[in-house]
Amino acid sequence: MEDKIQHYRQPMVTVLGIFLGFLLNGAYGWVGHAFATRRFKETVMAAGLCVCTSLLLIVLFRILNMNYPKDRAEKYYRLTLYLFITGISTAFLSILVIMAESYYLHRTE
Image (spheres, rainbow, N blue to C red):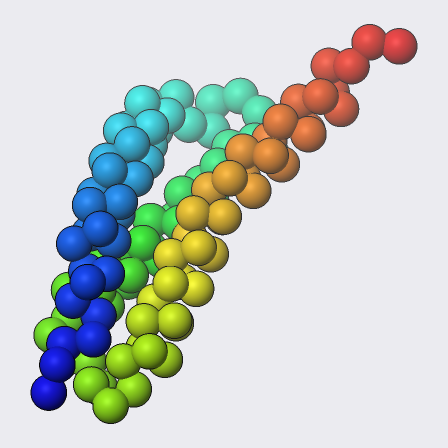
C-alpha cells in the first residue's frame, strides 16, 4: 500500500525542527530570569511554552510514525495538521496576551 503522507513528511519535519529550535532557544533565554518580575506575563509564557512544545513534539512523533493506519491516512494527517496549527497558535496567542497586558499596564492617558 502506498505511503499517503510521505509527501508531507519532509516539509513538516523541517518546519517543526526550525520552529522547535527557535522556541527552545527563546525558552532557554527566558528561563534564567523567569518568575522574577511580572507573574501574569511569566505564567502565560510558561503555559504557552509547555503547551506549544508538547503539541509540537506530539506532531513530530505522529509525522515520523511509520505505523499509522494506512487506510485512514487522510484523517490521521488532518489530526496531525490540526495539532500542529494549535501548537503554533498557542505560542502566538501567548505573545498576543502578553502584548495586550503590557499595553494595558503601560498605556498613557
